Image 1 (cartoon, rainbow, N blue to C red):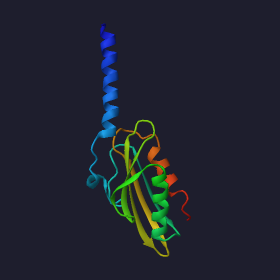
Image 2 (cartoon, one colour):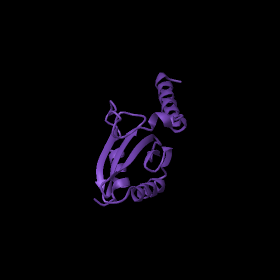
Image 3 (tube, rainbow, N blue to C red):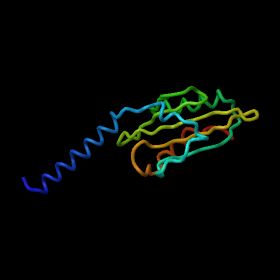
Image 4 (cartoon, rainbow, N blue to C red):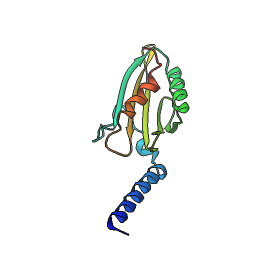
Length: 141
């Protein structure tokens, strides 16, 4: 074998190994379950935040978010309906993203604080922001 072939095979094995690792790596729910209002921004730009108020009651907001999240294959790994953390995986590579959501009564409605961030990588190419738009997009102002 030539050196180029050996390097190519080694690179392919490294990529395959990393792809497998991101799918099977253990995730500590206690570490990822944070208060979206208090959690510091990650040092990389692979996250998104939302702070908005909707006219729906907290239980209605929780049900709407759970419906969209579960339809996309996400599952809650910590907390409850009013302050929970979900894990969702990216479509192609299966990278785990964690979404922490806190619902606080605000007048007759609900303040929704959401923090979506990637576990691996530097840039998420807008995946976390798009997810929060989908999950919260149907909520009325």
